[in-house]
Image 1 (cartoon, rainbow, N blue to C red):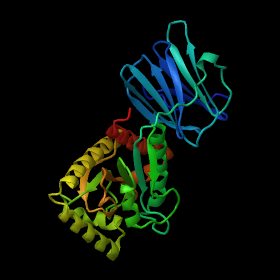
Image 2 (image 1 turned 90 degrees about the vertical axis):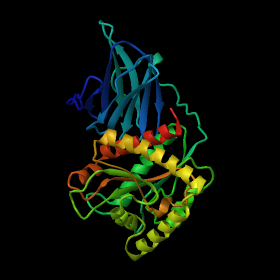
Image 3 (image 1 turned 30 degrees about the horizontal axis):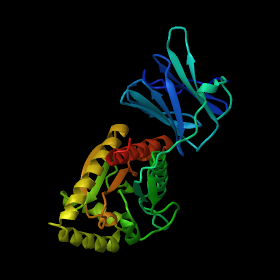
Image 4 (image 1 turned 60 degrees about the horizontal axis):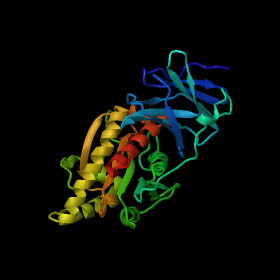
Length: 350
């Protein structure tokens, strides 16, 4: 039975309908186009040839799909559907009408719906490896839960990191994780992974909190002397908290002082700032979160990185508005997509 329309947000956004066991998504097109389908671990990407569509993104209230994004480059477009619970059966096909317009249809989660022609069946997945490698560091873990509010930091960071990793792998980038389970790691171990062979970027993911429940927004950090010394408490917290956090932060502060004038360190800092700006910009653009900016601080986990390294505070888990958002599956997809897009932009992967 046909359900209600889930997301009619704009002319560039797909229309979607929830059926029993599957979701149908319809993208209206001005004319028929050729398309190819690429399956990823957490997304389904439809490449549209010879047509440039307006950029658009949004969420689905669907059992199978969590959101979408539409982008264009070089006269072609990409329509990406974000999957909620992994791969399921699907069909992608094009329907033409008498006016010359067309509808691109995806039935996700069933073999039902109109039968596509043989020419519209998805081709097999082809991924071109890039020889690029990124380390993703989900903050905290094990007995170190991190902040606890509307979300538990260690759980969110691992969830978002896995989503980022799937998107990077879909683009042909090798991904290493400092942890893939609820495991407690030392800061020394995490930091050393930034230099575990040839690494092109190191990204540590965290959730913020503050004594004031009104604090909210996203901020992204590189290693270095903070311009606002009042933020030092955040470094202490992410460096382990309490007396241990104070000691680790002082150690990192001393290292930062020793690096002044080091040409290699200065070059890497500039690259880290470039990575941070690209990722941060994508996050702010897609989430409409409060922009707390790109900053520097004495975060121990990125202190020894010989590669571009950043630490992302994805939002304030104890904020009454932002905290519940961080708990949403669709919002986590948005965070992950933005982080991955920023990394790929920095690495110049199309």
